[in-house]
Image 1 (cartoon, rainbow, N blue to C red):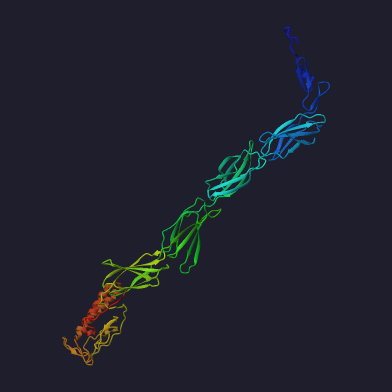
Image 2 (cartoon, one colour):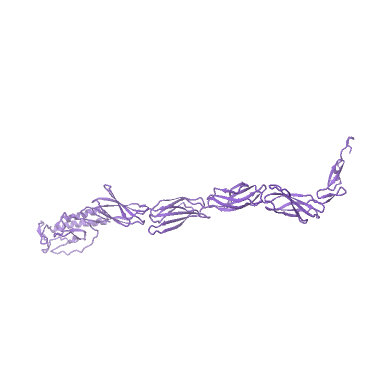
Length: 572
């Protein structure tokens, strides 16, 4: 074609006009053109039109598993003889040649199985006829990832856990995700990504007595697979810093620091072995979960107890924490002075509940602070303290001794008496009044007993213990038949008696009555002191005065002034 300048020529593109008359594609050339057909078609002899059919349409992946891919499409023309499907991995695995899968002409779906997991595949579908094939249509699909296999958990400690797993076969895994969830709150407590070489993971700082879910999933370039999970409950931690304090003879207090776990209670077990029967005794007490101490009461003194405390959560029980406690030895009770003398005291007591091995008795003289110590067998409940000084005050301390130690000391006070005081008792009775006659008058009075009052017979016989009554003393002139006669005047003269052969001095009735009245008053005073529970010293002083009156007056038929008049007083 001549250009407008009249000299140059340019090519004319026939394809620009009605596609050059070609049925499908037109290809312009210098000075000419030609027609051609798409894949699956052939150019007819006229050089313009094509015969055959086109490719499938709407090819897509409909479903994938870890080892298969399902696809679907729409057939191009009804006279298709069949389909050829080619698939090949595009990433991760080397495959030297494509795989082919044939389908019958009536099918427009296909499932390719036996694939690798987690791999992206390219799938191409060709429709073929009797003489030629259509153009191919391609799509890409990814197989699914399986979860890790052989997942398991093991507790490394009370507050840590280790999860282990294995890589699934025929799977492209680039890494793993592992995470820990509190099952009660559904809060993810920890999450991490691990490389493809990892086969375990550890979680620490867990809360005791808590239920956790540990999950692991595989990760590829394209997707994260489903999780494999396992549930674990951490151990219930026990209480700690268990100790015993505030120990008494029948109780002790147990203290502890509560565990971290959320508790519903504690179980306290108390074990002891009785020393008397050698039989083990066990009791169990349930305590609230908020407790941090407990007072154990009604225990046996001087006994060793084994205390085991277990924390209880809603999942399990902790290990038992154990400590021991020994109750104190209880002291003797009702400790008192039973009798006193000039050189000894008798004390008695009620034994303690504890099984003891002995008693320790300490006697301290108040003035000099001199001490005496005695070890008394456990079978005794009374003891005579000897080698004491007369009329001396003492502090007496008594403690029970068991195999676990001494009890608290019980303390009393006592005083010895003079060597010349006789024993008396508080007993008083009323005697009938005697009839007064002209020959003999007897004073009417309450009975006053002086035990162990020695009267010496002039015949030289040994002293005899008598009971003396004041009302039996004669107060007026005796009759002529009596052994002793009173003079009519107030003076006294020696008279030799037929019975004894000794001279006696006799007082008038007035003098004798005065003496008896004095003794009666002193006797009444003793009774008052006993009723008032006055100290033994006041009683002993009054009794000693009575004794002196007996020693001084021969009319009362007592021993001479050199005779001893011992007194042992019953002490309240």
